[in-house]
Length: 121
Image (cartoon, rainbow, N blue to C red; front, side, top):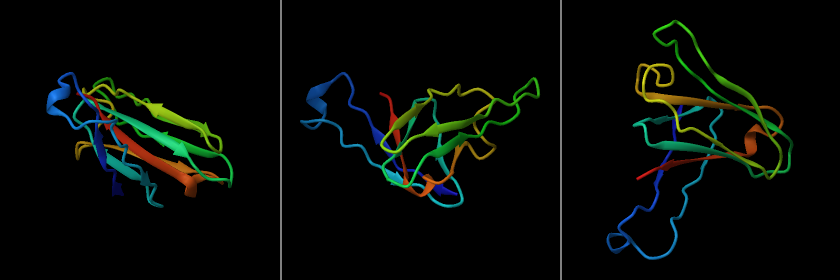
């Protein structure tokens, strides 16, 4: 799995930040799935920026204390559309044993999916 790059959102103390807006770092999806280290402050964006068709994005969950999973699956993203995922619960159920959240894109438009991970302040 490829590790997604994070973008820090601007916070409440503008004098300590650069001027202008936050430039979002987009990462092209990899063929084997992608992941990001989750600290409890991230939101995942998935954008179908191509013209080849609809992509399906799935965010994997792990078994929680009650032995249940709650995968986010079958989220179809049409050409030109964007979907936001999160904010995920940092307790059991989302983070894999390595501390990451895993995401996979499939479908005819999967090659056109780009991800951005926004870190809230």
